[in-house]
Amino acid sequence: MFPGGKGPARGSPALAVHNGELWCLWLDKNDGLLYHATSDNQSWGPKTAFVGNYWTGLVPDNPTAGPALADCNGVLHAAYSVDGSLVHYQYDDIAKKWGKRSLFARSSATPSLQAFDGRLFCAFQGDGNSLNWTTWDPEDGWMRPMSANEKTWGSPALYLLLDRLCLLFAENNDDRHTTNTTFNTSTKSWFRTFGSPSQKTAYGVSATGFNKNIALMAFQSHDDKDKGLVLVDTFNNGAWQHNESIGSSSSDTPAIAILNNVITVVYNAHTDARDLLWSQATLTDYTPDSWMTALANMKPNLRITDITIPGTHDTCAISAVPWVATQSMSVIAQLNAGIRYFDLRCKLVDRSLMMYHGPYALDMYLQHVLDDIYSWLRSHPAEGLIIQLSDEIKDNPDFASFSLAATTLIGQDLNKDLWNTGTTVPFLSGIKGKIQLIRRYRADAASQQIGINATSWADNHDSPRFIIPTQDGNLVIQDKFKFFGSPSEIIPQKFGIVTTLMDQARADESHLNLYINYTSMIHTLPFRSGPVAPWQLAIGYWDTWSEFTPGINRHLGHKLAADGFAHYGVIVMDYPELPYDLIDYLITSNFEAAAV
Image (cartoon, rainbow, N blue to C red; front, side, top):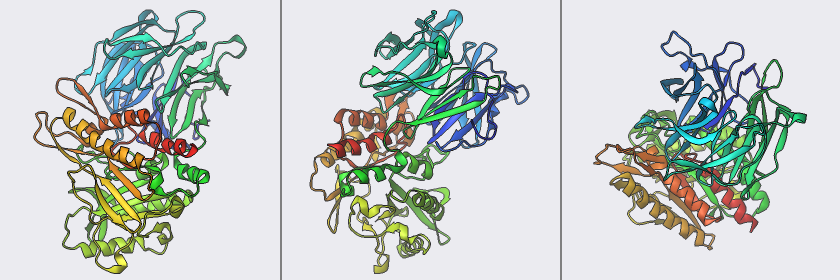
């Protein structure tokens, strides 16, 4: 049961992953209002009122069915039915409120939401049990609803599989077999494909995708002997497998989502109380928060030059200013998701190192960031990570003060045992429970020349790569980030450079070179539509003609799926969890390669 009395729930709950957390939204059985809570897979946070219930600030919505949730382009969206109309809200992460309310379709049932190609798709049951759909984008808002030319019994489920948008629903007959359809992006229509699960559901379904080629659906059994029993079916190896019971029954359609390789099913109990319950299972033999531990157990003599390491560019750049922000997950959420390379950029302010992105202060200090990392690392003593630390004041004349502050901070007695300040690229075992420092800031004093020396890092180097020699190998780096032109021109240009270094890393069998490959980029003016934010270049860009250009993360996902598994070095990304989990793709490549 949810702790703290988070239930009971009337209708189906909703689940979505947003900013590295699991979000649950449900309709309270007692007061008829919506509430949400978040989870890190271990526990649920406090029950929080859905502030957007209040349309004018005076009159509350009165939802008539369970809600839907989805993350689209880093923004959390909710939809639910009020008096026969579907209502749409967006969540403001800074203000921590729901807003931008709009009405967009007619339905009295629970809808389904899913992001695809930069748009938010909604599927819902309409009049006469017709299966309808519509889309939203940030430029044009909601389009006119259209029919999917199917009829559904209960709520449908949108999800991603094999990089396609799919729609599951229960056929509108007594058998209520589940049927799968796929969206044709050219004809803007749905067609039946992928074989259908053909499971019988008591009412509706929910579904989620994982790592492109795996999907799961949750539903209630329609068999007389166990009606209402919560079942989970899995699509893998090209077909839907035999379903598995979670051992409990629900009153309404359960919700399913995956965070960090952990499947979570949330449902209301099949009792008068309708308590909100949850059940979990793992998808893999490891979880992202301990993937290095599992890999070292398989192959203890690996060098970090032999593996693929997911990383984040400007790790701490979470901001309400679009052209400053490069991440949406906190440092802890990144660690739990499997990020093991942190790009930390600072300026010395009043003798303390403050986090910056270029000229913009990020309202946090390096000490506080490191405290979070230290705490996490002590609870994960077999994991390790790399921190590249740099001074955001280029050619700082007072570099000695910065170097002294950094060395003092790293050398603090309480946590200096967590640092590996060696100057050579270590084995994986060498960073077990440690932080390997890559020092990008200048230090003249011998006692401050700690870590792998990367002070010759080239700023926006024009060639596909540059090399920094170390004592026993090289850092091979690609960090070209300034591009001029339209997003449709510069995103393929950047990804071509990224691909070049990925292919070189994959072919390198010397075990001596650590490849560090930045997928991040910035758009330099002028461009007819104005500045383009990092999230648009990473996730996707809508122009003023409502044409969508897939971001670099989409290209990276396609390459990883096409290439199979190999070592790519360190891949440093903006928004690596969007539009789908690139972190897991990169981590998985280590285990497939290690098993060969």
